[in-house]
Image (cartoon, rainbow, N blue to C red; front, side):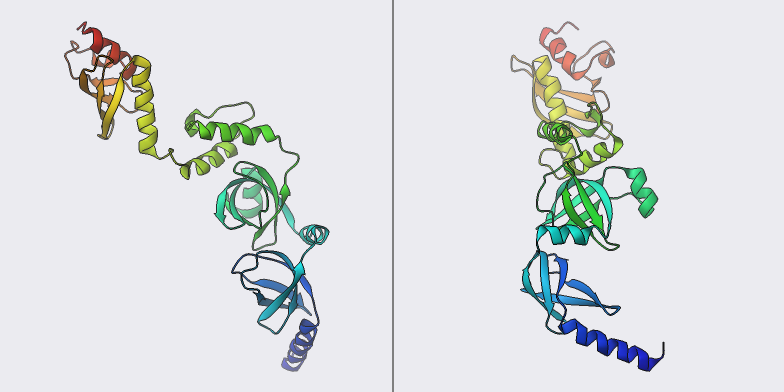
Length: 276
């Protein structure tokens, strides 16, 4: 194409631009795009803070005014032009944008040569762990709907385990997939009470409670913890406890070299009865 023909194309596109209304998705503070006569225009929406699906009218080559919010049938028709992705919601990233994780890692790897969480825009319904259908337009992922084919019990089970602060390595139920474990781990990382020190404290506290003792504090020593705790009769002890299986590294009293025969739970009874 020579320069004169190109200039004529640009001039024709600019004329058409001012008379064209177009449907587009928009995130808060973002821009909208349209294609006119083969030319792609990126425009700032007015009002600037609009978020959603809108019908826009270009004002000039930089700005487009929101005429009305788009109807659901028009949005559905727009999205049908793009490939579908099945994802599970992780957490709200910002406003109506969520982080989501693929339901099928192999499918994502085949299509995108990588497996990673993705941002999904204009998510108007759903919660963490729920499965959705999104559409990929080559640059961004847009929410279409909650995936009605999914078993809602899966999200409920994952949410229940999260509330109980079940560690990801202990997560187990019928139908669980590696993708669900990865998803659960992503959600857990942003959930209060799931930080590693808090998980360590919970583990030690539960073991002592089962034996009848009470945790006061603990310190990380690398492969083991130094645990400060009391028996049910209020006697205080300090013991070294292995991290991997809570076996006793050093009880704090003489156990005739048999410290490692006990774990933290059974150590409580030993200390209370002082049989060694």
